[in-house]
Amino acid sequence: MPELPEVETSRRGIDPHVCNRTINQVIIREPRLRWPVDPQISRILPGSKITSTDRRGKYLLIYTTQGCLIVHLGMSGSVRIVSASEPVRKHDHIDIVMDNHTALRYHDPRRFGAMLWTTEPVLEHDRLRHLGPEPLDDNFNIPYLYRCSRGKKVPVKTFIMDSRIVVGVGNIYANEALYMAGISPKREAGKISRQRYERLIAAIKDVIANAINVGGTTLRDFVGSDGKPGYFKQSLQVYGRAGQPCQKCQTPLTEIRIAQRSTVYCRNCQR
DNA sequence: CGAGCAACCTGCATGC
DNA sequence: TGCATGCAGGTTGCTC
Image (cartoon, rainbow, N blue to C red):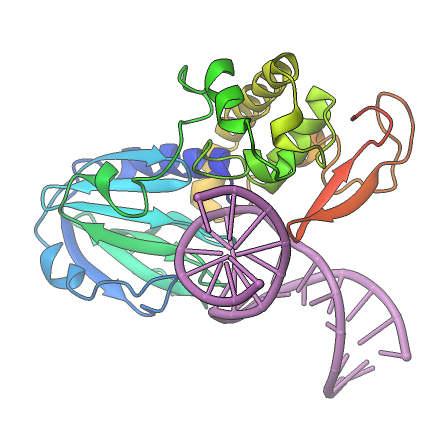
């Protein structure tokens, strides 16, 4: 479910419901996420106030007067605002209960996600320290990406999915951006010209910005109902379309695996 | 050091 | 109907 646009959509959805609320209780039903949830937070957080939310890559940041919760949704995680009395479903692992009897409820069947706690400067946290620039930021630009790519032997798809290079480009958007840029996902990152990286950067910024914008229109549903945003499916050009004709040249789209991830591309348009 | 890949989990679709 | 298999939007941390 969650790539960067979904995380941003979630953040925007919960923000007005959590900011300036005081935390009454933290209920940890299942601490075994990607990393164990610090049991101390059930003691520390009650009484403190949520001051703001932010996002770094796919990490959702919830700042409080005592420290910061760093939330990752993994492959299957979601957060939503519920009435604190709403019955829990399977995989509702954590509730942050607030003073108006609502709760921020964390749900994650596969438990690849995380909820970390820090009282240190957040961006220096071990999980965030090594992250590359945000894809929509101006410091994700041609000189930067071109320089990073030199000498890299990995396929360009693996390269742009590396969070040390740029954050937030997951499997879906990597496939889409490479299609938009006309670059084969298999091509060696270090052997791609500056000009072609220019196209690729534009494509990455475009696909992510569009997904965030569309996500915004279904924001209320997303938060209220726990449903998938469902926005992207219509606009996807290659992901999940193996065998179907390329929209530009009608060649059937090819599916291969790169670094164990499903990769779909047009072998005619993408070189 | 970089590159490749197994591992962490559950749910769901598919095929026998 | 039941069971085995393979796949899924992410990331870390092993090996070589």
